[in-house]
Amino acid sequence: MKNNIRVERAIKNITQAELADQVNVSRQTINTIESNKYVPSTVLALKIARVFGKPLEEIFMLEEGD
Amino acid sequence: MKSKFLFPYWCRFLGWALFLVHVPVVLLKKDLGFDVPGDLSDQGLFNSHHLFFMCTSLLMVSGLFLVAFAKEKIEDEQIWQVRLDSLRWAIYVNYLILIISLVFIEDTGHILHLNLWVPLLFFIVRFRWVIFRLNRSLSREG
Image (tube, rainbow over all chains, first blue to last red; front, side, top):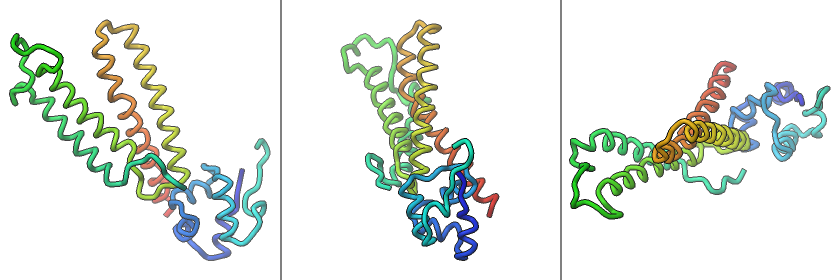
């Protein structure tokens, strides 16, 4: 699964730490999600999508082989 | 994320303190006058050898237990996953060592000794190592 959190963050102009704060996780978690090392739970994915005000599919998308 | 069944954050320091207290006591047991072998008046279930073993083991195990299952500063789902993963590895390693020592060591008392601290210590080392790596990749990206 890939995501474009980094792009969305740039558009909204917030840092990893600010996003982490808003969804109640550590900065490490946001960092590993952005670098595709960690797949968030549905709850966390929905929270992240809510911060950016976009539907889930615009932020997280399946890759080939998923 | 609700973190049930975990000790508060400060228990980590308490745990290390208990563990560190146990080390010199075990190392210096003869010098401190505990656990003198060969005393015939000292028999029964609660003889000094057993009492000494019980107290030091309790110190060590409760110390490691507190360290292993204390909350992190920020508990989130990734920490949970790392914790579960480390536990799985600790059980694997523990049983591997257990099986090997069952085959190659006759003295079963030592197997209990190993079993007391191997899973906890391996869990702690592995858990902290993964968190250290996460932090390092974070500081590399800035």
